[in-house]
Image (spheres, one colour):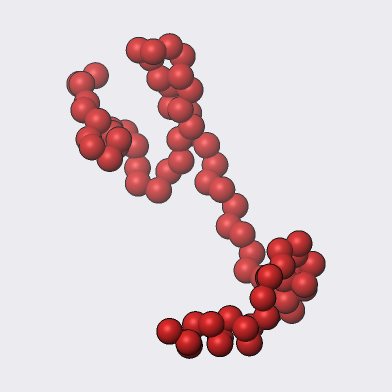
Length: 77
């Protein structure tokens, strides 16, 4: 096998690999890395508007101010 060089973005180009494939590195030692091809991650299903609103209502995140207070503060420069 020919030697390859890692670029500044930490990328390596190998002839046998295709763009879009997913590989999991296994670090055997400091000098040896094995690449194992894995299935691509499943696409997440987009939420409907009703599901998104329900998720927002159930969220534990809260705002310390009301929208009106924030509008006033941002418009008073």
